[in-house]
Length: 331
Image (cartoon, one colour):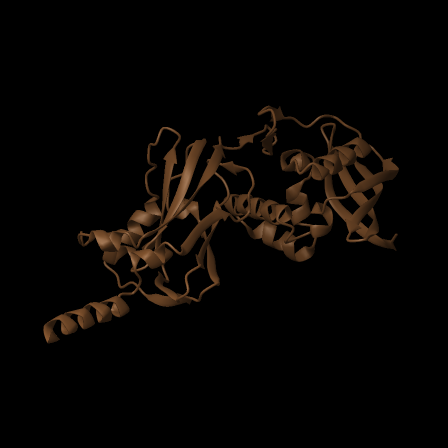
């Protein structure tokens, strides 16, 4: 009888000492989503994915999160034909080095969630266009100790503890086509046709841009916006632009475009107007100015602003290079 009690006690203690059971893992929700959903290109900006681990169990959920996230998570990206994409070179280098893996233990309490953001390009080679299915995995006991270069076999009960996320559909478009003037040629997401700048007068350029913003058609919105000129409007930005290399300037333009799209910079020009009226248009052969009354719905009232868009003309094409805003109150 004593032996039976002793064995039962050992089994109970083992249950308490186990970091997390397979049943407990089933109460852990592992979800991924695009952090800033937009159009992705084969050679372009980072593809950020937000990773969220939610604890729906009655007990704390603990896992190890490596400082170098490549040892805590992984991404499985496949084509629609179920062909797995190759890992990124940077990921292979990180995991093949003989190094100490630093980590911290994260405790997610019942009803709480823990999130962080990763770039898919740090994990998978995404240099080819196409349609893909993305799934992430989290290794609570770190990648190296579970599936790393030491080739340690993973017991079935531990393999069940690896968290697998939901699946995302990822569409990657061909690399941006450069026009003769070096400006990227935009593609219409609805039709797939190349968007070409037309020889429109300044007021029609502004109308085209604002209507595109109302419809969240970013390709059309950026078509007549001179991002390089917008970047160098002030002295500090201009000096930085001048001192950058060609590659550095390209990255600056890409980053500025991303921030405009996420409204983290120059939010006044990227905010969606509920209504607008072009009041006045003045232009010469080289310069133009268009004044627009724009309205924005904020809760139970409407905010009114007067915008002055400044344009320049080159080879018959007008583009926006600057703007100013005057607040006119609400109605």
